[in-house]
Amino acid sequence: MVFINDPEEPLFPISVVARMLKLHEQTLRMYERMGFLSPARVSGKNRLYSQKDVEKIETIVYLVRKKRLNLAGVRLVLEMVDDPVGQANRIRIELHRTYRHNLITEEEKTDEKREP
Image (cartoon, rainbow, N blue to C red; front, side, top):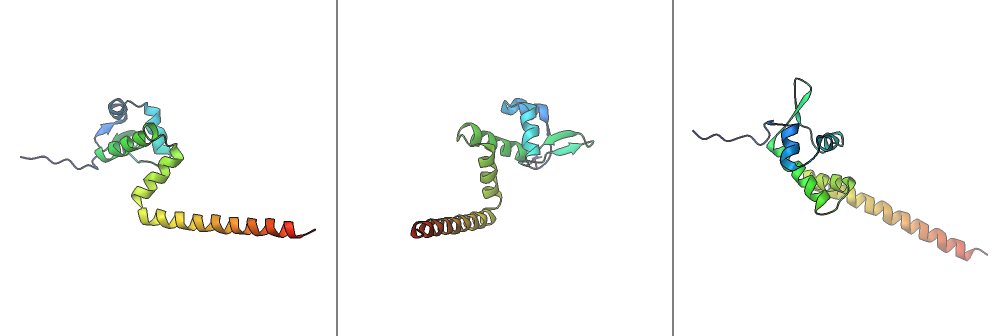
């Protein structure tokens, strides 16, 4: 008989995940508070992490430790991975706003130079 684990099945308590990834339990709780992941709750209290959660935490740790991203940067990367089209549209809108703001600012500077 072959057992295939569901990668989303909650299996690991916070202490095990912390040891596996060499993180403090508070770090995992902080990632949860920031919305990076949502471990399952047993009895409404104890967290259980799935293999998918562990892989996401590994990605976060990689981005922070190896790529030197801060958590705001990690959030952007995760959003791009989770919703690439939506994130691309948000970036496009923000770039357009920034471009328009810079145009208006440059026009104001030009007008100020013209006035005696």
